[in-house]
Length: 49
Length: 394
Image 1 (cartoon, each protein chain N blue to C red):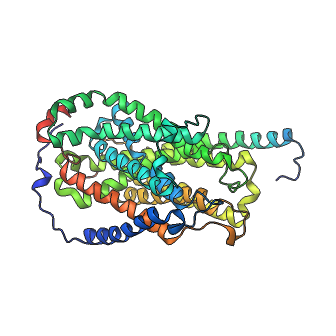
Image 2: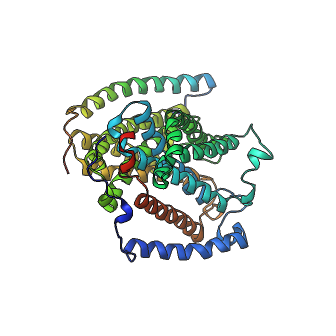
Image 3: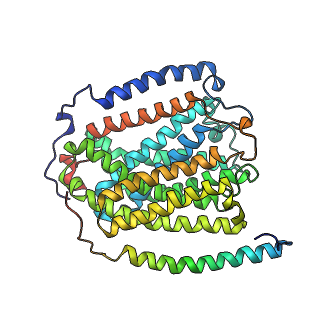
């Protein structure tokens, strides 16, 4: 992955680009995770002892 | 807040010869001569620390892990006092007590770790060194320990019957909680920032400019998990002194904190991945250190995150409790990875630091002292029940 990097600008372009893609993927993934977590969001539904 | 069971814990007779007391007694009997050896023979008599490796197991376990696991105090106090989650009120006192004892033990352990412990007050009174991140850590820990003492003091004052003084301290609750959150945010992150000075010594997969953020976010997960873990242990051992409020709200606390821990771990995992991306260290993931990094990332962050989520969704309290222990172990592993396992990773194995058995023995001794003091306090002071004289005040 590092073979084509020769300058700081190329390094920043590559790492920042990957982070932006990861951030978008994370936001989509987190939305799905939130829905998964709250699928049974009944607050009163606390198990008894 | 209504209570039905207000039995004073002092009335409950507990047998002296229990397995816990015997084991704790043996550990303390071993720890005392080690303490004598440390303070008469110096650091070299009980540790493998030297000028090349001045920070070892005590910094990694007693300090970094101890501070992270004591984060339950500020997390719970903030949830209840600042965010209005009054349904978790019963968890505040146990969490504050755990935090107070945790930070007290950090300072107690520092007395062993610092070469000349009588100089601990020097950063405040003799040579401030305000440009050092260690000054900031020292100042915050000292101030936060004071805040935790004040936050804990209403329970002690109720026990002592000092009503007027208690009333004064209780009025400070909101201010103390805000101060506690500010100080914790500062020093939890600064503990990570201490390692920013060692980019060539710490393995690139663990080193990141985001280390302070990693430490702060992981401390929230550690604090939430410790409250769940400590709560389940307390219920097993002290359910006879708990009032109805604590018993009834127990599972509500577990579910609420489990959900919060799940979300925090999801965020923590993401920023750790961003850290790898920022350094462009993907190629290191296929090395032995990379595989160990993946064990921590997947085995102790991502899987507990999903285990918490499944537990919350299915209302599986047992799963959440086990996941809390799992997460606590993950935080311990992370702190030890940074301070021991991946520190000086480029050196040959024979030149690297490994802890002496007496270092580990002293740490076990310190933790045991903390557990014994915790047991004494919860069996004498109103931690798991409302004091009959102050029921209206809660």
